[in-house]
Length: 315
Length: 287
Image (tube, rainbow over all chains, first blue to last red):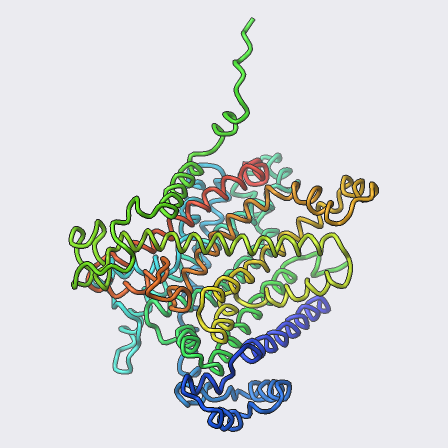
């Protein structure tokens, strides 16, 4: 089992390395370089050459990639073209906000989604399951900003219970900044929950169609007992997989939700960096999001290896 | 003796088996497709006509749904945006399927190094969150319609490729394909005449799923200000430009967002019905 996990970790490391190449070359090989982006329309040949030399763009791409990677591994991610500030400093201010948003959403969504999925499997094909199923299907199909706009209209504009934007100010009490988090977290939770609940239901029903569950049913056990004692332990690896895979969705969900609520996180930072062609900042944000994504996918696989007795004790 | 039941046409049996939810999906989808093809049915004004100086004018002042943030007719813009959103999504999905299915089947059918290479490239692309991948490309190439279409189509194609490869590998292992090979048929013939027809039902469901993802994807990019560029508008752009209206209690941003939701829900209802028809025993047989 250890070798299986080790191999999976090695694959992730290799993927991360390829990701760095793609992130670097994606913003590098394409037409127009950073110097043109800095100077814009009114660039002369001389000023272009000067900026290229100052930024080291006149050296071969391979040399710059190795240097970029070496600097990135020590936390030096370069200087933002738009603001002139170190990228790592700009990201440090915001990464906590994004993590807070994602962690709250995950903590609320996971238990609710597992309950809904299990209820659906327990009553498969009946009224409750059908209505839950239709509801999750609808929530899954709806864009995040629709959920956000409806929530804002009801709770912030009409009822005035909660603030419209989630921009934390230094002078606000912690209670006030928590109130600002409620709507963004709810939005993320709703969309996350729908996917997770549907996949949980499917994972349990998949196990329910196996012969040993049929045997347990024929012994005369109640359906609830069959699910808890026989189906659930075997459905655990796929469910853990579902949870981790859906948490990876947070990576892109966070970008849209932060933009809706004007929330100062990494996602909104990356969007404004893309709009201003601030390539070092884009690279750094993309790298961070990809690391989170690859890590969550790795966690999903390792957990299913750990939860599967056949893989835990190989013959 | 009872008389035999009157014969019914096959079409009728098929139609009567379509569940209510799927009918709802078909009606909603037909509504938007008709509007996208003939916008003048509902659009009283041109997209860019400014009718009033007032922002978020009440219904009646500027069209049936009121005005947008610049005083343009919201309903007319919604209908023209429907054409843009649906048109782009169809184009992107078709491109993604053409590339994804072609390469997916190719890799399934041949065991040469090209398959291994395509596989690994695809796996690396799948290791990126799709929105991040799109943002990297747009940061470098800027926002233009060809960039938008090709980027989203490429990302969707990686997902189609995975499904098509798996399907293709299952089908290629069947006896009738071996028989075709023994007859001396070429790779093209096998792909088009043996593999493709047998992969159509699952691919149809996948097409629906990819279509909704394409709509959500280009709308999200439009919403972030990185997709379709104003003064042109798709539904995502319309949500973005009218978002401030929420503060005045205007429903202007909700209308295009609801339009996106209605199409994606409609397609998902159809996909759900299709999957339930083909996998009913797995999901419901044991209950």
